[in-house]
Image (cartoon, rainbow over the protein chains, first blue to last red):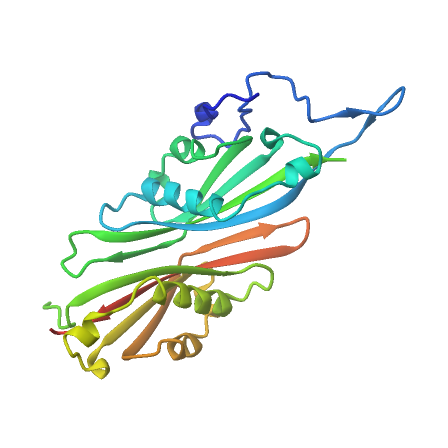
Length: 152
Length: 115
């Protein structure tokens, strides 16, 4: 059973990090019959889309985390189980569009994911609108969680 | 330069998408619907405001703003003096394996009125 603490040490790289304690990729291969392996390929299963904001603080990490939460809580996914795999077999690429993408703490965004292995990519996007006085701004972040599984 | 705009009373936020057609205008229209329907401007009735005096500034963020048909977006706003600006923003998600693209629009609607 995967730990509840996600693989937050993925930090600022796009490297896959396995959230499970075991290093073994027990879902990655199936041995057929007497010999040989069935080739597995990573295929996209679902895109989940969400929006998050920071109304006054101008914090793109806050908006991005809220956007990812919004993407996740609109859907209950059972595709992994339907394919005979565990929830932690899911490979989740998180894409975030937000102003000032370099300021986003990707580890914090990654920690929103409850299951599976995750990566985070942040690009310039979303929207930013200043207030009339020019003293703060409202940020919108758009998030997409691309959920994939290794399938035969 | 003095700000001659009427004071902003609300900034309504929304997002919308087109999952397969890469139609930025469709995504923008859905984002406008989303933004409009997360609030109700009850002050218009309670303060007996003339709706024609409302200035409505719509900003649409998409990755390819030149593709947004701003006239169609303008027509989606039911009330007020409407202006629409499309800027770079939102998010595109490419699927190279399926030659597919999902496009997301972010929208902010600023409503201005001197009360």
